[in-house]
Length: 393
Picture 1: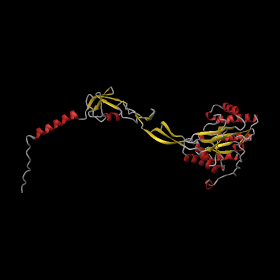
Picture 2: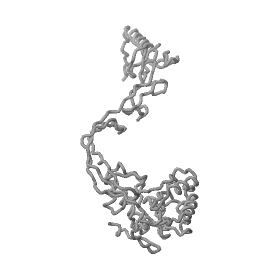
Picture 3: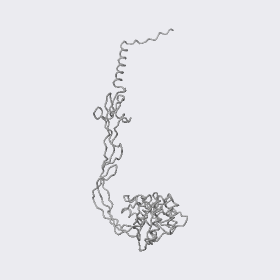
Picture 4: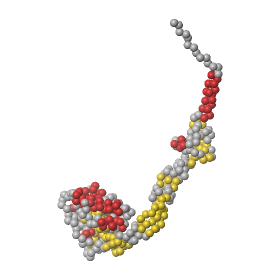
């Protein structure tokens, strides 16, 4: 059987002209609206971009000079660089949205965006009671705790900067009693803060032992944990150990819970590592408040400051440190120096001069407890380890 040939549909005479017209229109549309390079001016520089490119795309490509503004505090301090309003874009002299497409001949000018000022928040807060001081001397305690007041404050929502304060109610004052450390003898107390510290603590300890002097070392719990053997050497040398908080945190503005934690943890760390039950507590940086006195009293720690401060931490030179001590010393002085917290080589050198000068003037150098005629804790056995169960005080 013979197959018949396939038939082909006839092509209309109108099909080919229609297709040509469609192709022509598409080509024209491509020329008019398609992504072909077009000349523009960007921030005064002649350039080329694809037709329809947006200012946002130019910004992402780093081709615009304008940058976002900053987020600033109510007082004008920059809080977040480029955290403010978007850059200002002008196309052909008119401010434009950054998402609008650009055409041939567009003149694009960018400038920095506006700064955005943080919001202000109004709060009512408790204010610490005013402090009233009675007496003089380095040993401090609270006679009356006082009561806090209240105030309305306006603060920056991001910075926390206080902008204004209005007192709502005054608190009752807290009364702090200051007592001298001297009980009549020509004695002074050498005290050293911020240790134990590599090199300098051992160097100071060697001088004190060679001179037959006992002193008081206010140790930071964190440093005691890092250098337990050094802390124990200080204790075994017969020195008194005081509490200088767990991490040298300044506590004047801290909450009672934070204050309690810092003093308690510092005390317990020293006890666990050295066996010394601290009697004295010296606030880190001298930073204290009524709450500091209250929490220290709860933890059976007596607050003690100083009467002679040569500012050895500023490293003014060993001769200057020694002269500042010897020029201001008197019976009952509590002398502040540092064995830790940084390079204490000047303090080590100055101590030789201080010891020589004090002895020449007839002074005995003793611990704080001896200066106050308080009983001193006996030395622990060597080696010493205190069980954790004995720290629940």
